[in-house]
Image 1 (cartoon, rainbow, N blue to C red):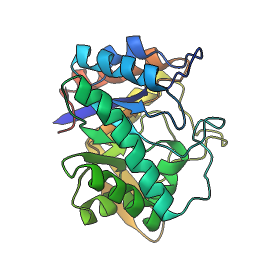
Image 2: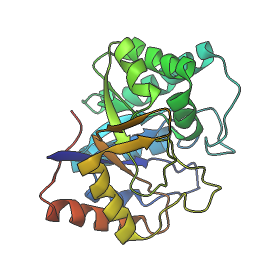
Image 3: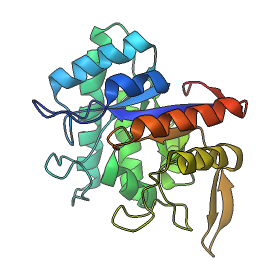
Image 4: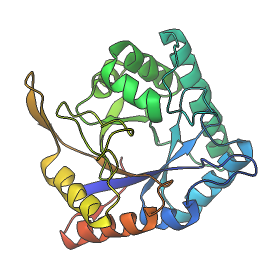
Length: 251
């Protein structure tokens, strides 16, 4: 059994530093690099791409709502046309740095509020998928396991990857709990590692009354901006290896 571990990176901005990118990149197989709309800037993007290539990890774009002030975690009132174009713009921007470095974009994973909104809103999911497909249909679209993102990716002719979150609490319908609620963030490395194993072995289970299902997980997300991200990532890595699970990039 194989699993990818991804991490959002390149989320610093100017003189502001966020995350532990240089340490975490040794513990993951894929990175999602901010494209300047919720975090990141051209210098940070360039530096993060070079670092990712030095460590041999797969590189994806991490497009978001244009919301630097709110770190992309506020839902903005945007039309489907805007979401599509803003997605294409951000993906193409990061891909430019990859092309200059002699490699290609592997995947796209939306960020924050845009990610969560598209998981439940078909119009937004389709807009993101169209934006990615206009850039390239060889790119993998990463979305919440069991969400509308996978359906939208298929409609647009894209491959998709189901994502699971070892550090986040889930609602019965398979969506992520609001960060404002108790239990939404799992801080214990041991609890996060246990959830990682459940996600890999059992998938994301949905029991909302309307649906009872389980969706397999292809990639696990580690949040690099968490204070104990290194301890969490190490615990997850060790638990997977000890269970005989191979950690490999999404393909």
